[in-house]
Length: 395
Image 1 (cartoon, rainbow, N blue to C red):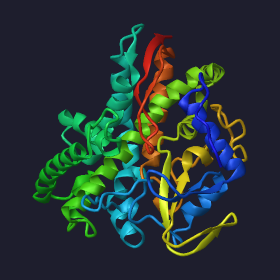
Image 2 (image 1 turned 135 degrees about the vertical axis):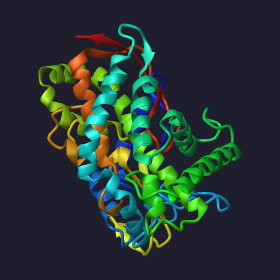
Image 3 (image 1 turned 90 degrees about the vertical axis):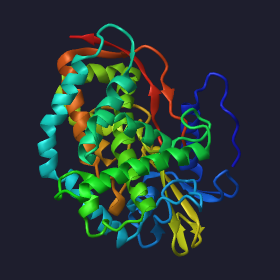
């Protein structure tokens, strides 16, 4: 297959969307022999992504879940990049923090914080929604569930950005800088570990790791890997869906009108925003054995990349998939949280934050108006924003 650069006037986002549309149509399982990340298979339609994601006996999450490989001398093991039984054992340790009872206890905290953030926005004046709302809300909640010092929560945003950014793209200048900052992160969290080790078990994630039978003897780099997993999973996905939802409602103003007329659509709209945004573009697996997928022969050891960003645009499941449709009947079928044993652990917490945010927005504002072009994260993995200039208009 051959490709040309986007024509003048076509955005990079639109061009990539057309790229994936052609792959879904002509080669939904496509082999890239030569790439910056080595050879790999791309899986781009909904049905086949689900087949790979649910088949843990054939497709392994080890040694990593992104298209690029970790450097051999700086490995960060984490439970999302483990197979059974280690995956299940480690995930089980921290799962209680997002159990239904704990989420019910968090709801009033989230609503209070959302209200405070929204009530302190400058009405009628331009500001960056990403900084003032998306980052602030998700970082506050992440600090709470981790048991991280609240006044130093900005460190969590920085470490999340450092962990996922491409060197030279504006976050870190080099791989050496990334490593140095991640080791600083490890040093800080080792201090929290040592503190929790002297205290009785508590309901925060660090305490759970310290006192969990499957995690209490983790090597330092495995601890760092799991910390990064929890930071990115608890920060980037919700944060970028918060920004993406505002952008989408501005791109499809008829849907904003529909929301004003019927705020009861908010829960379904949240699922549709997460589908439309797809905050993590892909996950990767490695074939344990030879396997035939849609007629293509995948060999044991081959890297297989599931492009969630493409599967969430599959018209067979989501008609008019490029559009935000807040009452879409299939919105909850989105791929953004994955399937099977690796399905996003915090999906209900993310849904709840977005639902409460939009409930509180609709009580206060007639419109959040986007007044400039968004600036996007430069990453093959995270689909997010660094800036979204807006003006809020009261009711």
